[in-house]
Image (cartoon, rainbow, N blue to C red):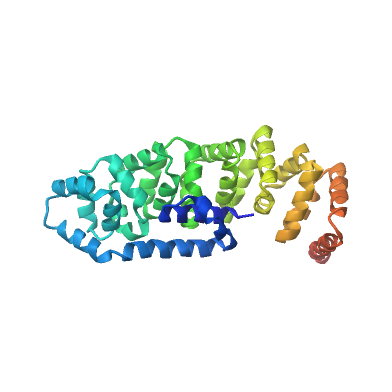
Length: 344
């Protein structure tokens, strides 16, 4: 099964190559970092193949008035050639030309643009123009494109865009495709608690795609934010939590989910671990297998300790069915966890 990070990278690579993501499924054999490196090389190769041509085009913009350049760009060059040329323009000249281009054309250009090649141009764009283009990209559900631009925008532009974009599901999907996860932490700090809670609520109570994306986001941010978002998930209404558990079970996401539960406060952990949905024997078996395969016994065993007596008995019974090797590793982990307590 592919990881969430692998899925994101394959989708972004497919966009660069202009092919359906399904044609690249064989790349799930690679780590996410390797797929990302492949994407970066592919993007650089596509740009470098005609770099001299793009440089000549950029040089001519110095000699032609901006209104005429905008007409040529839209009517003759098209968004792909413009995207390849954008990063070679002086930032203020690019801004001047962009003011004369329709928002729809700029959105087309952004879809074709590698943001890293035009970081200075993007950073120089006025906030109102950024919001207008972002609104159009969101209308088209171009979440991949929007996520890739996040690294190049300052906090003011991000804050203005998030204020304009009231669709929390869209924000979640954009977050899944953010390139630099450290930047994702900065963005979460800009969100008020109520909006962050609603993003988690939308993810947990929505379709089968949203919760994996939320898990990817939670596991990508710093520890303080992981604790905050984990507790927000635990505070949701029970139907949303049950849906969250069902999706995690169906998509075998327990290796990503267990660390999130481990970050919750003790009261939230106790409430969650004693829900009937988590007491189901098939779910318990999947959790035990995930803890064993991913080395997450240290996260799981303290949760079992919070179960009521019936739950602990059920968990022990399920563990007995998982084979001698699993039981041996479980007992080893129990002894390891007991040692610090014995020395305390």
